[in-house]
Image (tube, rainbow, N blue to C red; front, side, top):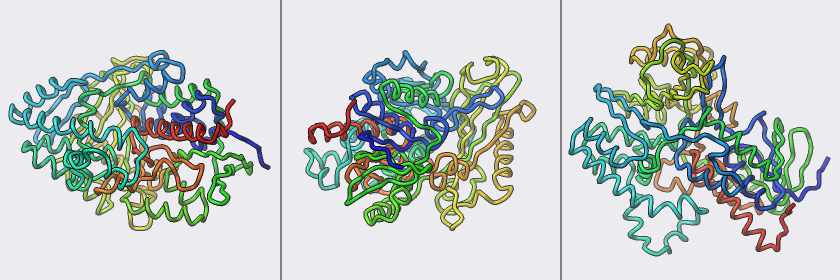
Length: 514
């Protein structure tokens, strides 16, 4: 059965799809979203287990201006819909030699002061010099690489001041090599290494421009959403619907339909065919080109391009509900191992669970996320460690092997107890998720959190472009340009909405409007 429709079709109610849909619906376009699961948000999700709530995807918000702009331009102030508050302190770092670094939110001077207190005046001076370089990188890369549709390498080369900009960005240098040239303090080197994992990457291969991530965190802060970061997905779905978009849940798309190189619609799992000249895929780009488009030659070509990039790492997580008097954990705690390189080797080279991984512990100071709103006597902990992607074919670890995930979860609990972060007798809720669960729950191949990694100088150009070579097909989300993480995913939706709106003007408004 075919449904005649002039609507824009969005595959997936993840954050990127919702961001694009909301902007387009507000602009007057007819938009219809098909979501495979029963709720919006994609990986951005807050779950509740026996009164304890956990963010099982993103657990902090950076660059909130991306969403302030989106909500404002769709008719609501962000603060009218969500309670967004700065996290203070922003991060608490524990190093293997026993030292500790507690960083404030949105304070450049405060960050330098904290580093001086923990590691000395020289380390603080090195950090400040590094952040000056990061600030220049951000100024140079923000517009062409983050806020705009990514052009070809040729189009970037002809930009004014390109050679000076290239010197600033240093595309020939890895994050690790640049930082090691600028910083002597081993703690700060380790701290910067971690930011490569924000894009699912290895600091020894990831581009130096990722130095912009700690700069953005330091300047613009770390933020929390009351009730959990997953509330953002729910609020965006409401904004999209209030602007006129229609969302169908439990409604997977099985195929993107094309004729003569142009999109003609989508086929749903229930057999319905929805006609549309404009389709936005919020599915993983590997699935978009490898599955949804069938055996099209152009799709095979695009998939080959994408697959040249190394897949991003995955994650293994614990959700732990603790009863009794709260510990002294801050909102975001990171505990580093003695040998960080061994962790990256295990994840990217040996494809084995990490024996002594970096522990990320999220303990929200949020009464909405614990039973009876009793913060004094309950804690909801989300614990995440880097893990090799799931695979049975040798290019990952087989997380489906009986007993493996349970054994690793027990190992992580032992680590948390031995390091003094939790007391075993306080555990009231304990569940876990492996890369296999991430793959199944979010249709993310291998459980890769960010699609493809940023490993390699050309990685940005290997990521799926927002504008597909198939006329009328666009891609948003963490596996498409400009990348993963809430700010970038929101910007991907803005970029695609802008392309479609501009194209509509050029085609005399042929896209359906209400």
